[in-house]
Length: 84
Image (cartoon, rainbow, N blue to C red):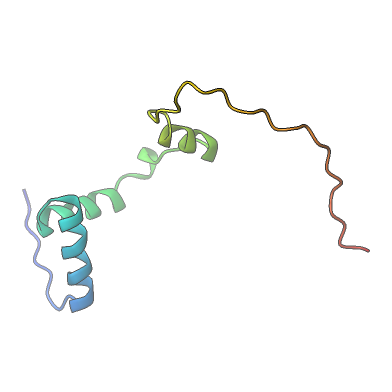
């Protein structure tokens, strides 16, 4: 595997990398590697699903409980006009 040395890295960037690595429980090196791999992934590996599908995935494992949701009343809205 290749190695990479980055010189003249801004102190603020290094501190943000350190904080991010700490939040993820990994070393700065591992965090930097993860960032590079994600940002440089081939274009065809991008998620091409719609926004609704991505949001649904975020809440797929959420425990909604057994309580029924109250249905929202059906209303028809008049489109707003900028001409008035």
